[in-house]
Image (tube, rainbow, N blue to C red; front, side):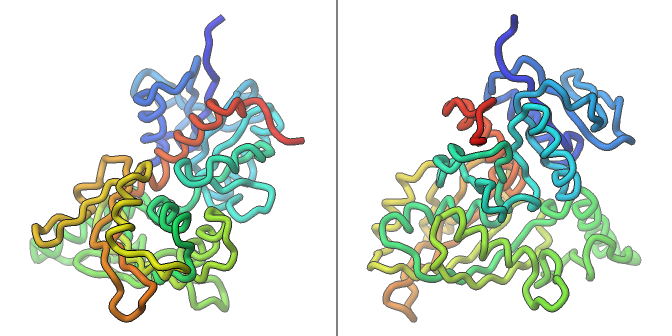
Length: 342
């Protein structure tokens, strides 16, 4: 009998799902079979490596050890519990389960111990939250975090392939002097622009859901409900790689020098911090890489207990696919695939 897990990847034809498939192979996750799932219209499509896409039905989801989802909240809400009932452990990349009290919200370098309490579903955080907490974890452990003021500069790939195509089409039109296509993915043109509107506004809320995710998910992952968070999420004309300006007010004194030392020793973090030599994290340099890059580490001159950081990461990789596969690896290492709290 062959060894390894039978793994489902739900949403396998999307931007993140395709990266998940690639990472499962490249990182050597122990599988005996990987089965891609997508919508009915993609069923039967052959992917790289000869994998054939299947539709989600009660019959096709039987017999899996692990299911990794990147298919949107409604699909996760309907099918993740069905996979669990059929015997699989689910790692879900949507926002559907993140704030449920009985669902661990986990970043592999930050709180892997939370996996031990899973009841079948593990949530992958929002991409902007993910990269930020990887950098904040060592600082929080050392000095505690009192307050965060965050401004994000989010790439269009976070919205999906249609948004990437829209940015490129608009940019070509502007440069050629042609008529600019009407925006479809966003409320306004994204080419050569910046939109202070990443995510959606719920009725009666003056913050977007992206901003609320940064606030709520950060506190849950770091296990500290007292952290105060202010966030403004901005969509910028970058294809891949989210950037963040983060002001960190700590509870105990923390110098920039000590912060650099802690960050250099932190798993999953690369420090690029020599501004005099124009060395700092850039979205184009982070694209295709799995680390979180941190630079511009400096004292906030307006506050004795605050530092400023610039944090960059590939939103499709560490912000989504890489962490999902890393969580599968941690579940395997901890013997938690096929086991859950009743």
